[in-house]
Amino acid sequence: MSKIEVDAIDKQSGSTLTLGGSGTAVTLACGATQTGFGRTGTVNWQTSSIKTATFTAANGEGYFANTSGGAFVMNLPAGTAGNIVSVVDYTNSFQTNALTITPNGSQKIGGTNASVNLTTEGQSVTWVYVDDTEGWKNTMDSTSNVTGRVFLTATGGTITTSGDFKIHSFTGPGTFCVSAISSVAAENTVSYMVVAGGGGGSGQTSNGGGGAGAGGFREFKGPADSYTASPLNGSSPITVTATGFPITVGAGGVGPASNGAWGTKGANSVFSTVTSAGGGQGSSHISTCVPANMPGGSGGGGFAGSPTTVGTGNTPPVSPPQGNNGGPGTPTGPLYSGGGGGGATAAGVAGAAPKAGNGGAGATTSITGSPTAYAGGGGGGVTPSPGANPSTIGAGGTGGGGPGGAGPNTVGVNGTANTGGGGGGASPYPSLVTGGTGGSGIVIIRYKYQ
Image (cartoon, rainbow, N blue to C red):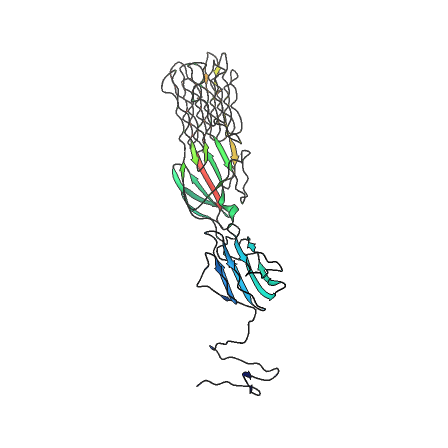
């Protein structure tokens, strides 16, 4: 049998029961409930009924409004003095899809008979009905949402870390699989570098071959990132979602197999909407016409004896440019010297007898956590004449460009794998030798993970 314990006098008069005297506390036993004692300024939160469509609120209740599927309306009840209603952004989506608060009939919100829109991410608001003059007054308004921190999560490629950033390096085809995005929008715009395969160097039976152009170099440093980017930073931003992004890594081009033939340009590398073009093939001894495979991310260098035959870089054009032109070869002897292939940040150097042209310099970036150069042009080759010094070959550009062949009947040196460096031009005579193979490309993606 339950009982009421009273510390002072119990007085019952009509329908009124007075418990305790002035200054006396009334304590409910553990587990007991109460009604009729009046509100304490709080609401009963409706945790079992998340709102996703237009509804009418009730006095004394608080609601979790999920507008991720679209905007909707919360109708306020007919208010009387002391009524209270609260609402909170359940999915942090008010900034995308607003929750509209509408008063009942001619009643007011803050002194005005008009609806209001909640448009701040994570917002929570509490209204109390004061009187018919002001109507519902906002007594609490939080525009900051304290939530657990969610970071971007992904797999694919070879994964390393640098401080608070994770780095995915793709040296071959693969998929960058995003399983969760960051709760901070700026962190979903990732940093990346996309380098295509370098072109194949020129091979000849006479006259020094042209060095090949480097693969196109494109880079973007995300707004939440902090590494030292290359001078070419600023390509198109890529904002990832929770899905898979196929990665293409371009192979290097090869030198020609016969005199008068052409080798191949490097293959393209691709990440999402960004494509870097393969490097152009070094010019071979065939004609003064520029063939279709000399232009590219960076252009191929010209062969000796045809100083006007050079490949055009930044083809197709993008901004910032993904590469530069190749350098022309020497027009005359005694050492017929090929021009250097273009690099990411500099054009190939022209051949100037007795010296063959150096490959253009590549671009240096610290996207992996340490400064590394990529996309250097291949060096030109020379044709030794009696008494000439065959060591005057073109050096490869910084960033993996292969130098030209170092002596008579010497093949061009390959570009370094996974740098996009161009292959070096051959130093022939009297036999056919081929140019160096271009270095394969690489794709690197970087983002904040903790």
